[in-house]
Image (cartoon, rainbow, N blue to C red; front, side, top):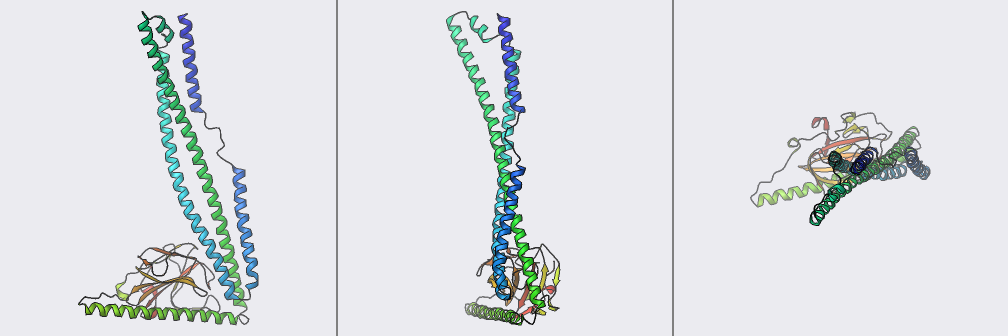
Length: 405
């Protein structure tokens, strides 16, 4: 009878060990790759964006004879797309952080599972090695009822301990399964966001290509587009007049502040162009596509007296404040596109034109190196670049004399 019990005990232990090892070896049964579904989702994102672009271009078709209206409307569409891209970029960054955290949690769950598994193996090994005495033998060998009751309680506690360890191991296994599912879902969500981003970037490229083509058409039809060129020149004049009045107002306020400081017996610290150490405003590129001063206009009607430098860079590249100061203009102009102007004091200003996005608003204080905009091709422009200008005492100066990549 004892031999039979021992044999049964060993068989039970072997069966339990086999079950634990099988559970550890067999991974979760759910699928982790959905290639067909992912491909369909990606195609759907691309198709959705394609239809949006086609609708935009169709709406713009009637404006092709009006360069001003055409550029303004297309830039508005580009701005909306770039805002969506910015939002998607933030979502992707957050999703990547979620994936990082989920990965850490999965690793922690696997470590707990491994510890529980090793603990179970030791317990089973001990049971197997001590299998010559069964619980039933222990009870039957009791000398009296008290010993019988004590041994029965001991067996109950051992069984509860074993069951608790099995439950802990099962919970650890389930935690791993849950974390793996979560991580796979996070990866799938990230791929979806990346597909949307790719589709919207293609939309931006399509609209920019169409805009560039139409501007070239206006150039080749210069006589018929003479009214558009006049409008371009008027826009530049209005822009320069606004800048001039703004500078006069700021100069008047700075003069009042200086007099008030002197009247109070204080020293009024003012700055000049030579006091400011500018940094390169476009770290993504050091390529100057158009220098300061006289040039051949890239577009008919565009200024041949270039009042800054053009830095060719990919659309969406960061535009940095070349020096600390206060944003005095943050707006859209048909000629300059989305542009910013920063006051650095002492009659010194920097200008950043043709941006795809403006990230600083009028009245905002910015510090040197802060991202204030994104490179684009808004306004009268045929390709992504940053027009960077420096003004001192009401005149543009050559930025190449004060900043280098």
